[in-house]
Structures are given as C-alpha cells and as structure tokens.
Length: 389
Ligand code: PMP
Ligand code: GLN
Image 1 (cartoon, protein in one colour):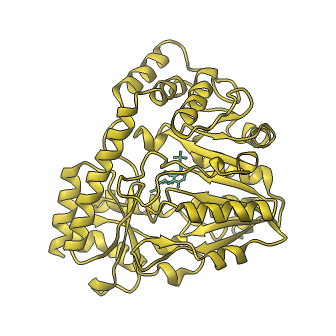
Image 2: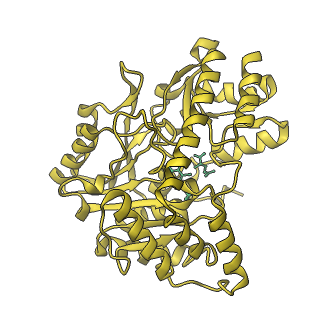
C-alpha cells in the first residue's frame, strides 16, 4: 500500500518534542528538551479547576469561550498592555495557542498565499501553513555582534511581496529566547501596512521578558495602525505552568476573530470546560504573581546559562521565554541532531536540536536548545552531568 498520508503532510514526522521526551523517558536522562515546567501553577487556579469539576462545569462551554474567561482575557490585556478588546466578539478562547495559530492560518490563507515568519520557527507553524496549502517565507534570525539574535532589515523587506497574506511573529521567541526590539517591530508594522497584510502574533511568553532585556514586551498590536490588522494569540500554559490544560485565546478586530471562529468550531468546537473558570481567576491574580513568576524563571535562566558556559558551550543569552540556545562548536560538535541523539547516552541530558526549525538548516546546524523551566535542583543536576562530559 502507498503511504495514506496526504502529500502536504509527508515532510512532517513525529515532532522533535515528542521524540526527545520519549528519549528522555527511555534513557532516564534529565529532560531539558520539551518546554514544560516541573512545578504546578498558582494554588487559587488549581483549586478553582477542581471546584469547577465538582460543580458541574463538565459539558460543552459556549463556542467562543465562557463569558467570565473572555472578560478576564480582555481585562488582562488592558492591565498589562493597554489594549482594549471587547470580550463579546473580539476575544476567542481556543485549545491552546496551537489551535489558535492553525485556525487562523486555515481561516485566512488561500492555497499559494505566503506567510512571512522568522526562522528558527515554532514547529506547528510550518505544519499549519502546509495544511492550508500556503507557503512559508522564513526570514533568518542571526546572532549580531552583541550576542543577540537579530533581524536583517533587507532580508525582511525582501520576504514581502504580492502573494504575502500575513506575517507570523513570535515574540518573545521560541526557540531563541529573542525579544524583538522596537526598531524590528516598527519595521514589521511598516511592511504590514505598506503591503496591506495581516499580522498574527504568538505572544505565549508575554510574561517572560527578563529585566535585562533591551526592550520590554511590546505587543505589535500597540503600534500605530496595527490593532486593526493584528490577531494577537496567547495562552495560559506558560504563564500559569499548566501546559497540559490547553487553554489559549486570540484577540483582534471582530471580522478577524469571527473568521477564526468559523474554522475553529469545526476543529475542536470547544475545550477545557472546567479549566476556563480557573484561568479566568489566574488572569486576575495581582501583579506580584507575574513579577515573581518572571523573577523565578530569570534565576533559573542564569543558573543554566552559567552551567552551560562552564561546560564549554557557546551560549547566547536569552532575554525571554523558557529557552536558551547553545552552540556546540566549542565542544567539537558539527551537527545538532547527532549531538542531541547521543547526548542522553553520553551525558544523561536531553536537549532539542534547533536545526529542525529552519528551512536554511545550515544557519542552525550547530545550535541546540535547552529548557530552564525546571526546578533549580534539576538544573543543577543537568549542569553537573554536562560538566563531566
Ligand atoms: N507558540 C509557541 C512559541 C510555543 O512555544 C508554544 C508551546 N509552548 C505554543 C505556541 C503552543 O502553546 P499551547 O500549548 O498553548 O498550544
Ligand atoms: N512549546 C513546547 C516547546 O517548545 C512544546 C510543545 C509541544 O510539545 N508541542 O518545547
């Protein structure tokens, strides 16, 4: 029999995250591959979910999400970013940011439309673009003289053309930990307006920009002329350490949100009934929760970065997210995939090769990603193992 899988999905195997987590389980290695925390989120949120289950929130919620959660999403964006979205019609609850991204691309892209994105890109983008029959136009992020990943303005300008439908911007950026600068955001905004295209922003790490970042988190939708053409996506998984709950959301102008809902209703329809009221409570936690969460992750970043440098890796300091990328060249490595496949046996640690997130693989061949969303004791153990290597 021939492969039953449709041709457009054949280039996509098992996700690197699933492959590397399975390898960690098989080898007993410390898993710094897939980005998920090893501690639970705020107690108020956990209690609210348990209570919701016991109080009957176990059937389909309304298609766009329960009103209390949509209101909390609106209030949270107003509180932190000064953005106003009407919870009735401009906010949509989704099955994680993953579904929001997929439904948006499927809703807005005709076959052959081009999506400008930045590589290394989050793996689900490539698959969602392919499912829509659209074409990705990746712009490569490259380390600059200051040791940060940067956008080449000419390369970005060159990626926009008559077939461009949207730019897909992830900041803070997975896997590099890059936070887009004001100048980079301004150029993205200028190009979106000049070419009259949409912007779709993936801001799942919006609360993880560290205090030493050159630019704080600036949602693209806050730039002049951008709110009306931007669909802003985020999710609860990272901010509240509940990646398995899969509660995400999209906010934007009514017509865009309504287009995404049209597709989303036939993907999952709805999800996470008892988790929705719990995330509404989490989004309303005092500012201290968000600053302490960030401070904790920043300390974990510092611990892992210092350990990786000690172990001989070339490390680019991330300004945000859960992740740090490390160059394996100083350790004699030439291929990140080979390096990561053998690292559990050699050192008892799992990392993810960044190369799989590039079209121009050479740009990422020697880079690997480590996650620091783990307890300090776990990071210390990983570092001790890597130092012995
Ligand atoms: N976008 C980025 C950049 C991510 O890192 C992730 C995974 N955490 C997602 C989207 C998916 O988010 P969710 O788990 O809410 O679907
Ligand atoms: N977002 C997580 C990461 O980047 C993993 C998500 C997944 O396994 N699909 O590691």
